[in-house]
Length: 132
Image (cartoon, rainbow, N blue to C red; front, side, top):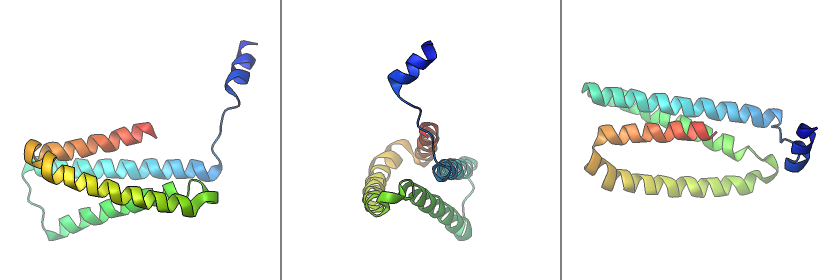
């Protein structure tokens, strides 16, 4: 009886459609990939290993793949409003990239160092994964 009352008070539980559930799983996988990339960069910096051109290019390509995948998953979350959502997400992506580059380049790296800044980026990715 109490369970029925609680459901009436809070309304029916929202369930993901199959496409939305797949999108959430893909987004989680991409965020895990970004966490792994941050851990790899942190390990390289911590061990003092100097990355060559091929390694740097590979890490940049991996980061671009993750960001593009997250963008596609977020834009496809609501297919009825996909065009409107994509333009808002693109604007937020550009603004966030600009602010992050300025904060990292002017504040975080000079004051805390590259190693700590990389750790902070990894922790931000983990917190985004937990919020998912």
